[in-house]
Image 1 (cartoon, protein in one colour):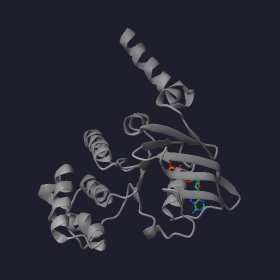
Image 2 (image 1 turned 90 degrees about the vertical axis):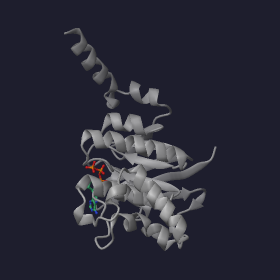
Image 3 (image 1 turned 180 degrees about the horizontal axis):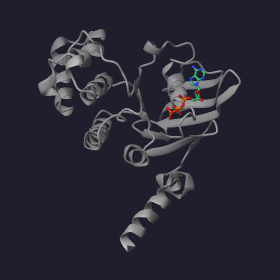
Length: 243
Ligand SMILES: Nc1ncnc2c1ncn2[C@@H]1O[C@H](COP(=O)(O)OP(=O)(O)OP(=O)(O)O)[C@@H](O)[C@H]1O
């Protein structure tokens, strides 16, 4: 089995507080792992450690079999995308998406094609010329999502990326992500508080609780765990149906 990401025996403390302990994780290629966990459980800390924005106290991280130790964030080919991700204020929507491709010195014709394609996907083509301060919050979020996806990173770390969107836009973004993840063979960790979103987005599901990570073998295993709340949800709808 080919793993894009392997984490072995990872620990992280902040002062006297143990945030993560004995974390082991394997993510197969072309797979999305949804990560659940209550507020403050360490989800963001784990993503930041993988991205190289925070350092681990102990443990090993391998991307495609290669050790990430001492690799700077920009050398990791990993993109970390969070809810309030900032766009470059002096670049319009098109150029914000194009930014990573320009850095990589991709041919300008190819950039044109890729960015226009992405803008279409995001339903943002007619806003391509707008500067970030002329876009709505949801539109900015879509552009930063496009900026992350267009460079086809080896691993995408998504930290509540659709959290601030209304239900309809959120649903559309979930579909778009699933579609692009499939087409572009994306591997991703997807942090969310939303049970349904975790189920829809993830090929697999994991949870962080008391500093430890549990990766469910199958989604069914997850549904069986009382933590998931799935049974409660089913009971709720059954009860409504019976009234
Ligand atoms: N730089 C820091 N210094 C000290 N403590 C920190 C730091 N960053 C995070 N923490 C603490 O680590 C714990 C985990 O935080 P983290 O942001 O990883 O949680 P989370 O699971 O992403 O939460 P949420 O769902 O609320 O976003 C929290 O108790 C937080 O206060």
